[in-house]
Length: 175
Image 1 (cartoon, one colour):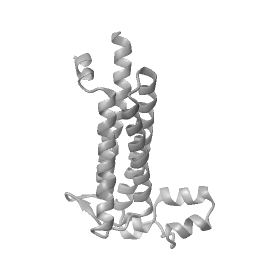
Image 2: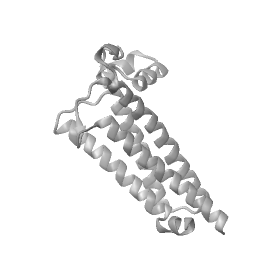
Image 3: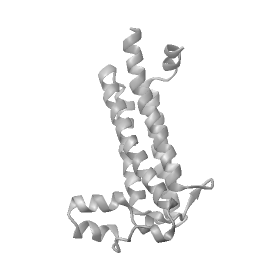
Image 4: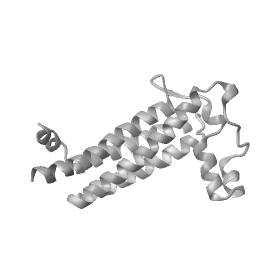
């Protein structure tokens, strides 16, 4: 049964689907920003970067079409970055669940100025910990907040990365 399931989708096809999910997510986020006027907060931008990196790795993997070891590497990288994306998006969802009195303090500066004023480690910490802007729900997708939808996307991508890894393990066991 397991062998049949893992023969249905090749790692190359899964990587192509991962790329398409990432491209669709980033495309919708850009559409919401440009057309609908939804301004991204620091955590939104960090999640977009994670989607971009996962998408690029998946596209390279789909074009490369590796065997054995290459699939382990691509599957591991997709799983690792997607897991980090789940953590970021979950933190974002947590911030949005807080009452306004519990919201974190705003950094008070746009990201460009903050990047120039702070050391890199401080900038990354500020971006990933979120600000008051991150706690506001200012756009939804099908009635679900953007960060929650992003978290669901990252969970799906993590499952896809694990699928690639498990498929290689089952091939090795069944060989």
